[in-house]
Length: 177
Image 1 (spheres, helix red, strand yellow):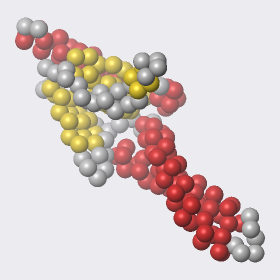
Image 2 (cartoon, helix red, strand yellow; image 1 turned 90 degrees about the vertical axis):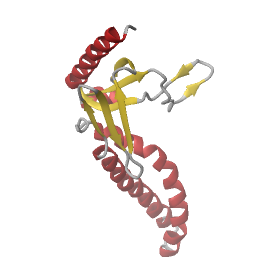
Image 3 (cartoon, one colour; image 1 turned 120 degrees about the vertical axis):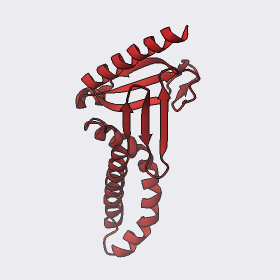
Image 4 (cartoon, rainbow, N blue to C red; image 1 turned 120 degrees about the horizontal axis):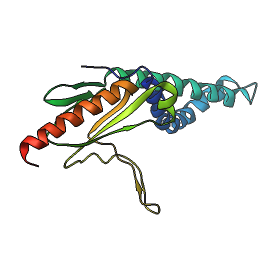
């Protein structure tokens, strides 16, 4: 099984900060009275300590979560299928046989371009992986495909795409589709 590109750590860090900003607010609200009691002489010290605690909480918990998520995402592209293993507490094992694969897309956002990696999306028949945002007015829908590889080296992503597309053509040609 292969690990993701090392630049993908930044992707996981940024993704972990979004929910932690909201959770951190609730934690800071709970901690604020404690810091206010500690700093009775100075009324400004309580909010400053709460803000520092809030920032440290987000950084520490976000870094722990990002490292654990990054280290527990493994993938393998072999002759029969694409295997993906991910998850910290609940593990998810995905096997995608080449007969079900319809298309392979490579995306490179701004973080990916700066860090030198690509996102590979393997689209399958009967795809059920809607996990994104839907903007009704614009008709824009973003989804996370079943074969989602978030941080693959640029050249390796092209090799994966080329290998899978060759396998699909061979598989579909033999099955009469």
